[in-house]
Amino acid sequence: MPKIIKNGCVIDDAAQILVLDEGQAPEALNLPEGPVFIPLAVWQAHKNTLAGRAGLGVWLDSHESVEDLAEDLDSIGAVALNFPKFTDGRAYSGAALLRTRYGFKGEIRAIGDVMRDQFFFMQRCGFDVLQPKAGKYTDAQLEAALASFKDFSSPYQAAVDEASPLFRRAQRAA
Image (cartoon, rainbow, N blue to C red; front, side, top):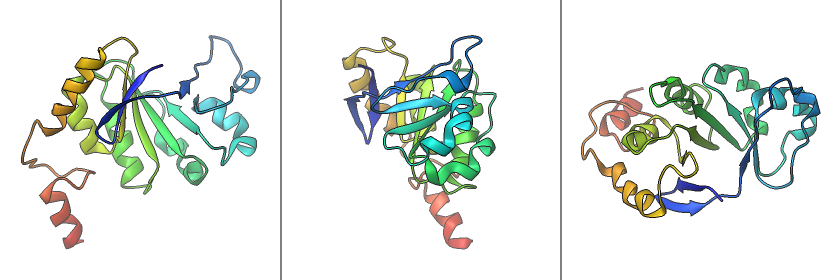
């Protein structure tokens, strides 16, 4: 069972992340019971029957836009954004857009090449769950990584999270 960081704790997570096989049609995918993240294409093919399903999330690959999901966010409890490699930062923008432009209050999960050095910044952009690749970190390394959220005592850039005094100041001015 994969480990995630959620609410400042390392916990086991039963959610599956489904991936379409090459050539597999989104309409043909059978969804398992329980918590699951499905690709955007599967959501688009089945959203009429899946809307509001408990434990359902949609994941977007780095080349997919959160705007493609914007109209459906009220029907989805969680969105996962994929980091195919640590140098691809498009998911940061996706998380920030989900929180600010679209007002998404559900879970935003970072999946893929999620690295400790980026945990603090992921949180600042709106991610509230971090899921490194299975086997990337030991349980002890993940526990130690919780300190990453305190790497900077005084963030000076505005961000989606409310930890930044500048973000709160900008909100009051608006």
